[in-house]
Amino acid sequence: MHIPENYLSPSTCGVLGVAMVPVWATAVRRVRETMPREKMPLLGIAAAFCFLSMMFNIPIPGGTTGHAVCGTLIAILFGPWAACIAVTIALVIQAVLFGDGGVLALGANCFNMAFVLPMVGHAIYSLIKERVEGEKGELLGAAVGSYVAINCAALCAAVEFGIQPLLFTNAAGEALYCPYPLAVSVPAMLVGHLTIWGAAEVVFTCGILAFLHAVAPDFGLSSSAATADDKASARSRGAVVALLVCLILATPLGLLATGDAWGEWGVEDLAGLVGYTPAGMDGAWEWGSLMPDYAIGELPEWFGYILCAVIGVALLVVIFRLAAAAMRPSVDFDRARA
View 1 (cartoon, helix red, strand yellow):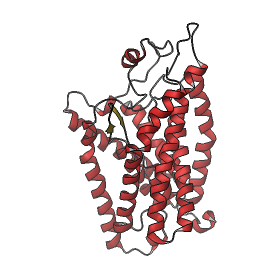
View 2: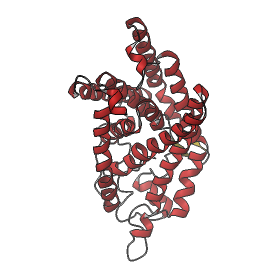
View 3: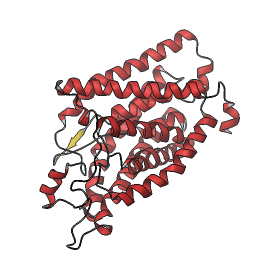
View 4: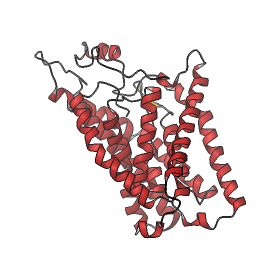
């Protein structure tokens, strides 16, 4: 679902980037108003779950791969505006350091995965949780919300791909950017997300949520954090760190998926598929990431993948700890939520 560089026109990227500015501004304001300072580092851990889930590429027949996002998970734990910030920072790290998604397309990718996905997921989760009591309602809401949300995000990406040949062509009628119309992009994106990748999103979301409820009930915006003793808090932190370590060590499983995600081919591969190189993509600017495709020099591919996972998680933890240090010492949380 990560839209690469130059698949969207500069004007499309510009419009979606500008559209995200008020979203980001609102998200920052809402988090400042509602997020207790001591919870901010935990939001960094939740962002790390998002980052790691996107490294587990899952194939479907036909050579296409996809992944979970866990944006609904973060929205459930910390609210949709906090999820918007967390997923945005994860996407920025992926694009800048690892070439996963285009730098120019960050506005589009953030609109799909950091805005639409957590907002839709949290809305459906809240609706179901209000009507079905207890843990059953929470897990059912998380499952349905995460499934619908990732498909809504995929649909947005499909539309962004599909309008390119409608709006941007040369005199010969050849597409300047993504050459696939809506009749191709929408089913191509949704088939995988309605089946395998939607199911993966549900498994990641509900699995991690159930784990956190069992071993770290004070994780997220929970009042139980104030009453937890030091020993219990230490055990909770240890369990969460252990889960992160297990996910990091398991990330090379994502390398087992061969092929590229739909719409994420290189320019040469795309030219081989459609018979020409779209003029807007031929020799266009492209960001030179430090560790493209989560590879580091001559290191074995699996080890480079793990090391990139460690780097990404570490950056997220540091960024959110620095954000916590910059926040006010206390927040009137109950008043803010009201």
